[in-house]
Image 1 (cartoon, rainbow, N blue to C red):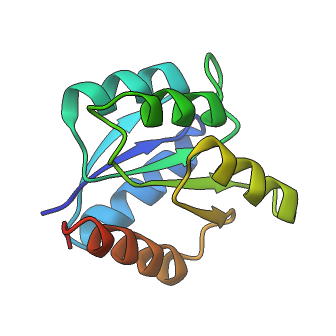
Image 2 (cartoon, rainbow, N blue to C red):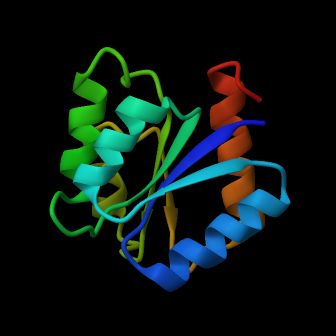
Length: 125
């Protein structure tokens, strides 16, 4: 069972996506802001992180930079989730260390393909 950390401040998005992922066999842990996301990644060692970019306390870009700078979490794939669909937003997310990028509203089949690709890349699929 791959473990996914979902860092999302919107309760409706968090609940909907976590339920849909759990129905597909993933174990999902949750964080409501970037600081909590970093702490959970360090304590829970997830196989993959879904990171909203527009977060309170610590935004997703800063949280991802912190995770990628820490040797204990640097290898965890991070998929950026954002409502901003401009090419510059994807470039910014990748520059922060995100391994992939997906836009909201979430299209689950597309996101699942990205999750599987990242898990396969790190031998967790």
